[in-house]
Image 1 (spheres, rainbow, N blue to C red):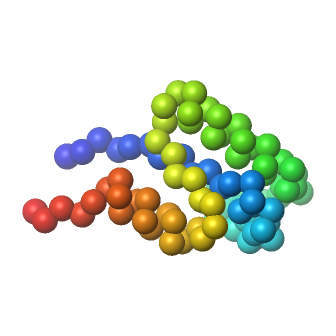
Image 2 (image 1 turned 180 degrees about the vertical axis):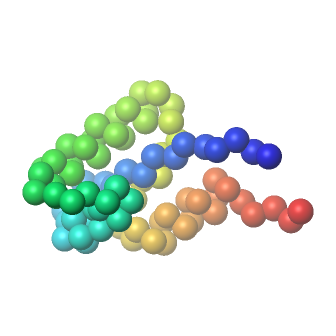
Length: 86
């Protein structure tokens, strides 16, 4: 059995600026936040810059979404985790 791998999902600044309403709309899908009043564009930009910097600094795997969330995510996952015939 393979060990789990950590992959950090980072959104580019242009992506966040162009899709902020969607980012905010889906912000609590995984974390189930009850209060997202803190969720501003500047805060999301700041968090993503920090996450990208830390991934690069510590050599963590990262998926950077630049334009099309679903397309880029599926393409990157497919490259990193190819399906093998068993």
